[in-house]
Amino acid sequence: MKRSGYLQRVRQDVNRQLTESRAVHTQMCLDAAMIAAHDVLQLGPGRAEDFCVAYREAINDMARRVVDDQMDDPEFVYAKAKIDEQIRAIVGPEKFAPWEERYGEK
Image (cartoon, rainbow, N blue to C red; front, side):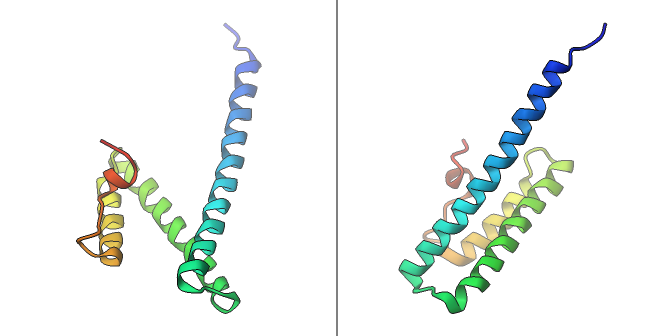
């Protein structure tokens, strides 16, 4: 039985929309992070570029860890643990919330 190309076109359109919306969301997160860094840490033009580079490196590193880990473990336990370890070191153990809390997982 021949398959209709309609479903394939719909899927391609949905994937395109998801890809575009992720890019917008990621940029909005960077913009919000820069605004917050300015408000709280007085980040200005001198350090903003370094901050943007570090942000992009951090988000790409996190994504790479999760994707790589999911190949062996769909729950990506190792990636979550490593990211949690970094966050715990930044905020301290008393203010730390594990992945499940930060991401609303049960």
